[in-house]
Image 1: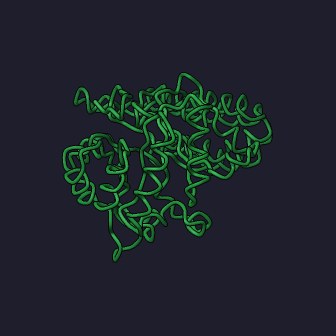
Image 2: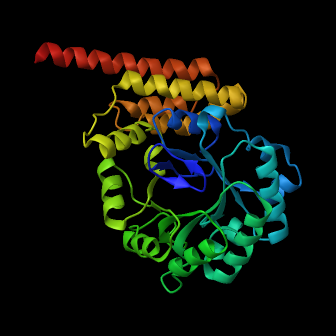
Image 3: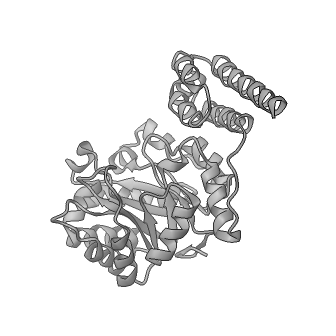
Length: 333
């Protein structure tokens, strides 16, 4: 089982911290499908320090999500430490994670996110300062390097460990790659062999079989699933089942997919408000529709929805059409 500091996980399957996605509504939905650990989307250290209302709202955690890792980012030691101390003392997060992998220019220009990858000394300085200021375990999520000429994953992970970090999650891509190309799992194995703290592998885990292969090939202690879980929390359940029993569960019926989509919507409405939630849910609904026959018209209709009732009606109509097709096929066969 995966253990980070004094926090025990029921299994090694971890939901990645995805910006603009991993709010409490999404995390809780994924957690209920069996994730051992869920990670919150990254939060600005300065937003916390200056008590920005929108930022502070992002720190909300439902007790049912736990254990949970809350991720912060920043480029200056003073504000990063202050933000970490606030999270430590004022939230029910179990783990404080530091973002060292975000490739977006507006983040790296502030010497935050993936910019840290170029300087193991800064990593040691920043992580050790945070560790000294908080009681909760501190971890780091990072990429393997800035570009092909600057791959310092081993040195960076060792710096995290020396600084008192309790785990490293490693995405096998460089900052320059963004989310393109193929993730390098060999570097995950190298990092695992170079440190004594838990290593969580990340990158190109799209199926339960991928998850098992990553754990076997890299020796990683945990496997992190990100984009594959968008609109498909079943990937978490199926992966946990496959790792524990060797059985590969089937895909859910359309009705179940739409029911979970509506549950996700209702949690988002409770978290924010109907207007914001419905607009934000459009992208999620499109993800839930992946693989469903006849989804093109439904996706177009969803983009016009302004209320819960309108969105639910579109989803229910898709279910009726899908079940009608199933009955026709049953009669024919």
